[in-house]
Structures are given as C-alpha cells and as structure tokens.
Image: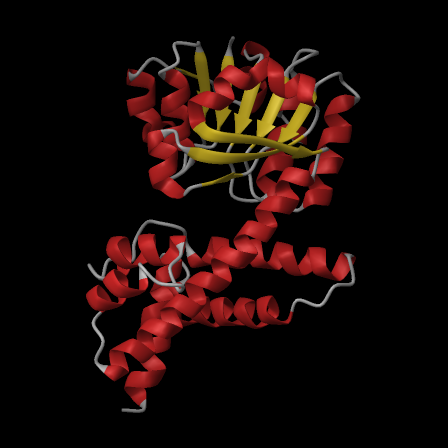
Length: 293
C-alpha cells in the first residue's frame, strides 16, 4: 500500500518513521523539507505539495497542530482533494473539534474518499516506540483496509464510533490529562514548601492512590531534571482544553474545573511558558509561592 504522511512534528515524525519501517512505499510532504532529511534517507519520497502526495497515495496520514492546518492541507489550493483518487483513506490524527471532523469527512465523501478521525495518545515516547493509543471515528470496513498500517504506529487501536467519536474521546482524555497535570504541579509546589522532595513524592505517591500517568511521566522526565523543553506544550494543551469548553457549550454541560484549569494554562502561557511542557506549570505556580516566602 502506498502511504502518504503530512505533518512531521514531534509526534508525526516518529510515527512516519514507524510507517516507513513497514516496508510500504511512503511519500512525505513537509513545509520545511530540510527537517525531514533523515526520513528521506530512510527511504521516504518527498512531495512538493499535498496534492502531489495525494496523487501517489492510497492511505494518507495527517498529524497537524490545528483544524485550520487540516483544512488548508485537505481543501486548500494544491490540497489533497485536488488529486486524491477515489477510495483513498485519510487518517487524521490531529486533535481537534469533533464537528470539524464531520465537515471534512462530508467534503471528502463527495469525492468517494474515506476519512477516519484518529487522534492519538501516548506522548512522544509512544510515538517513537509505536505504542500509541488510536481513538478512531469512522466505518469498520475502512479501518480494516488500513489496519496493518495503523498497527505500525499504535499498540492500542479502538474504533469508538462514527466520524467525530475519536475526537470526542480524545477531548475527554485531554480534559483529564490537563487537569491532572495541573493538580500534580500544584501538589508539588505545596510539597516543596513542606520540605518533601520530588523524589520522595514520586516514590511514595507513585505507589499510592494519588498515582497517575502524569505523575509517572512528568516528574522523572521533566520536573526532577528541571528540563521543560519538548514534551506536550502548554500552548497545545490550551488549544485542547478550549475544544473541551466548546463541546461543553454545545452540549450545555457545565465543566467548572476545566474552565478554571484552562485559565491557569492561559495565564502560564501569557507568563512565558507557552512553548514549555505542561509540567512547567510547576515553575509558574512556584513563582507565587516563592514571591510570598
């Protein structure tokens, strides 16, 4: 199967590498081709536009930051829709609004092109190791057609409902992950004031009811070594939480804690932490405590 891949950032690039390693022919489009020289060296072809990539591909992966990027790549000039052949499958791993997925799917369906919304979870480590969780919205027959390629990027592949359902579940995941990361950082600030080291916090609470994925990853990878570059940026978490709040408004459902948490991330972003990992909330919250000491 000829595979196309658009979006080679911190998540997309290792996912693309795993697809290349399946031995399927892979074509990549990137705005900055110099950043994918290693993928080209590994065997990928490089296209000059999404349309050129689509003309060569039977299955196209998207791993893009926002819905606006997806719209430009799919519907824009020199976009996928300009050249994709009927029965092409678009696998969109972008985290975005569920209703947007339905709109893109409708536009593609008019041209007999299939769409799966397929957001992922598992972080950069999972992307590198091919152990991500894929949350798919779409038709089971379409999933079956590209299952072998999905298995190259994810250890856990779930078809959770029609188009849009994958993005809905991913939004809920981000809601929980974002708030958990925030309360972890707030707990660590209090622990610091109380004289509890991050190492003790991790070793003891990691075996207690307060244990979580965020505790097990953010502490050893970012907070203890005091290195907050890379990881999942606060700007992206803020985008995801805004998606949750949009869903909540549409469904007329109060999400009080999420609204408060979103404002915390927004404040941290405005204070200069926008491009840092979400665990950098620890430094942002510490600044209030330190200022009062």
